[in-house]
Amino acid sequence: MGQSLAKLADSLGDPWRRECDVTSEDAVKAFFDAVREEFGGLDYLVHSVAFAKREELGGSFVDTSPDGWAMAQDVSAYSLVRLCRHAAPLMEGRNGSVVALTYLGSERVVPNYNVMGVAKASLESAMRYLASDLGPRGIRVNAISAGPIRTVSASGVSDFKSMLTFVADKSPLRRNVTIEDVGKAARFLLSEDAAGVTGQILFVDSGYHIMGM
Image (cartoon, rainbow, N blue to C red; front, side, top):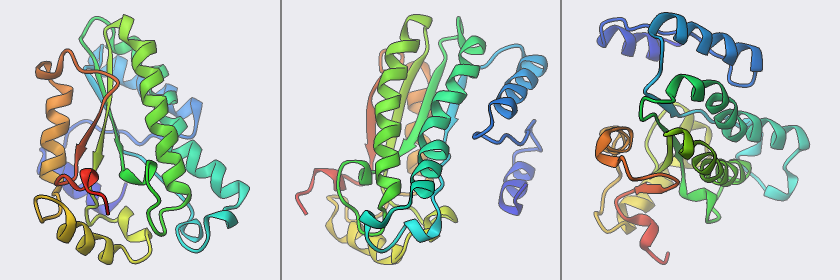
């Protein structure tokens, strides 16, 4: 477990936690078996997992390798399907809610985002199909498209600092969003306040997505 995650866990009073390899069917099954044993059920699931090889996040998209494509899709998009498949039986009858994290690079060409943009597009489409599939079981599935935030994973995108500056300059609110902004939006989608909302993408990006540039 990384130091950042361990520090966060400590600040929250050392809550129950387990490692889970989202690319492994067996690991995901074992994780949710442990959830069932410990808690008996599950109220919500937040998918905030993405990965691409560093060499794929720069240069020309046309040079994307087959392995790089497959890895980005598996970790960043198909993992939502895999997690929902095992989580759904624990969420039925509990007004369950699933939230995935995406980005505008799924809809527009963002320099150096490359294969991750395509993976996010897959994630968003999967979210809608899952919303249709799981809705009859009382489970909602939505996504948040957040603006760029300085995180450890974002450091893998080339020239990320320039992206932050550009968005802050051009967005209607003239600022970048914060982790707290995204967290509050997620809390809304996970709560009963959003009981009638499913299959939607909520933009939390200071309004940048409405602009023409």
